[in-house]
Amino acid sequence: MTAAVGNPVFEVVALNKSFGGLVVTNDVSLSMAAGDRVALIGPNGAGKTTFVNLVTGTLAPSSGEVRLGGEVITGLDASARVKRGLVRSFQVTRLFQDMTAAEHLGLAVLQREGRSGRIFGNFLTMPDVMQEVEHRLETLRLTALMHRKVREIAYGQQRLLEIAIALALKPKVLLLDEPAAGVPQSDVGLIEQALNELPADLAVLMIEHDMDLVFRFAKKVVVLAAGAVIFDGAPGDATRDPRVREAYLGSYADAGRVA
Ligand SMILES: Nc1ncnc2c1ncn2[C@@H]1O[C@H](COP(=O)(O)OP(=O)(O)OP(=O)(O)O)[C@@H](O)[C@H]1O
Image (cartoon, rainbow, N blue to C red):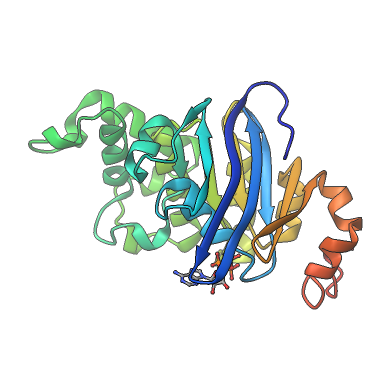
């Protein structure tokens, strides 16, 4: 198991998941402390998405535990986990094309505060909501897009909006699922800048295929292969680990990216 320095804020203990006879998550454990920057990597089909679905409550594990701040949350549904501070970055595919950036963020603020069920009229006229929306957009350099509909916003900036929405939920643990995927190379720098400026005490677990980004961002790497953790340690050591190289044979290793 990963040794987190300080009290772990997020722990996964001996998580297992099978679909019929297929073991997709095999005894996976990891532990993160506040401020950790961890990348979860692995070849296609290694079980990364399944792992995220298990910890966020979209899927139920066959066995094992997920803990947040020491509390077992395995039995909670996805929205209860978000309320406790385990947040997955909102996927671009879940953004509403006809809603503006400000509306998305305003709703996230209201959801966090349990006020989303009592909206009458335009919530963007609420000064406290608008003030926070403006601040969050400014932090991610999205101010100019405040009143633009998602359909009018470039893809890279939509991905920044996802991060802004996730942060508006004030997470303790943020799971970023391929934050740079599909982003034109010219805009990857914007995503990376946003990642570098995430709150220092936030524990961040990033799944990402772009190894250059992984190695610049993560202080620790967990490698999954065929559902099991085959490496858990410093990024530099991962590149020298024979099991990691074997798992990536034909992809990153051959391309000289895990070298
Ligand atoms: N609902 C399901 N029923 C059966 N098998 C599934 C199901 N979901 C995932 N799998 C299988 O579990 C394995 C892991 O899939 P998963 O999508 O978690 O991998 P991944 O590491 O996220 O891959 P990628 O990087 O390609 O997205 C694959 O073999 C996949 O076919």
